[in-house]
Length: 278
Image (cartoon, rainbow, N blue to C red):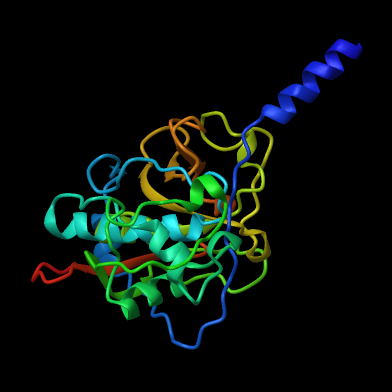
């Protein structure tokens, strides 16, 4: 009995610690909601997966509560890929974490304010030129001088966001249409029980509320499959490939699982000093 308790304690001590970091931030400027036309709804395919083509490889935020920065940066990378046909180099999450005055670095942040910073600063540097130090240390660090490789022209909600309550009536059909039209979407979800996810569609034993006050983590929506007996959304996390399904999780469709459609955003992005614009 004592041995079993000791083994359990050791396992708990050595269990991975997953940081999150979604914290709503006050902002003054208006965020538009994109129009979802009937043509967009009708033309969205029954199955879609941007993995490996329009979204970069799974990353790891590790000790830093910087999910918001990973999600926002990945959104810019995907927007460039949708426009040019190829992914840019990984962009500098560290720049957002250390330099964005609107958000809290490793203490958390939000998508609209992150995109505001990228636009106002002139763009994001590459990760190669502005390496990530916060993920390993858990500290935001000081803002360093940086260049600008890709920037945000504008940002929009893909579907109307939920502004309070249980958020049970979100437009998931519109979300699929927006994903097909605009590419991978930056989203914020309820990850309270993500530690219990090891594969499959949904988290075993959890209905995963999508209520407004339950959101705590930002990720990226990269696909869906409505053709099987259990339709699902495909979501890319920032907890390394050792978590979930090689860094991904699948949500059931039709119940706003974990708040998948509560706060979904995409950007218009461009390479700096380039005429190529999304």
